[in-house]
Image 1 (cartoon, rainbow, N blue to C red):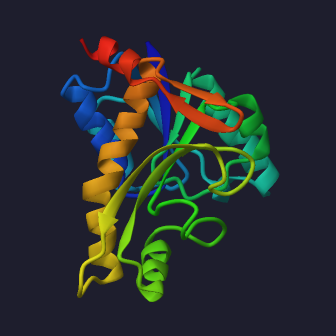
Image 2 (cartoon, rainbow, N blue to C red):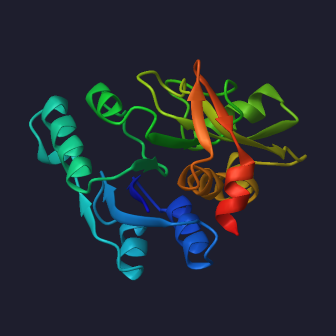
Length: 216
């Protein structure tokens, strides 16, 4: 069984996509042991509550400085004993100590086709605003392992999404979520649960034959 901890900051739509796939039996042998939010009162925590998943808040507002918050966040994650940490719309920089504690065991969903529109300052609507300003015809989403950089870890999955005439950042954001994010984040978890994902020389190797056997 792959035990996962999901880190969230807001509405939790990617968390819901994971929960829906789990309920449908297409996620593999996976158990969400805890949902952790850096914000109180967000919809993601309601989703965890409704699904009967343990959840907690670790907010930087409750600590004297970022170092203390980082230590508390790492302690909270470690206490859930995860095999995989999933950043599902978690808008906090992951401290290096956590990356070191979970090498190639933290994944993130980013709403662009990395390396486009990624890195420091590119999050949420800002990504889609930048894509529309640039006039790209295709955008999308990326699931990648987290390293000590920002959106620089090995890429696991990507899915393109067409930009349409008349798109606003909000409309494009919704389409990217529906057509890409909600598809490839659960898929990546399922592949990892099946033992189909490895990293060699900084690149991800996916053996879908293992995933196929697992699904059967």
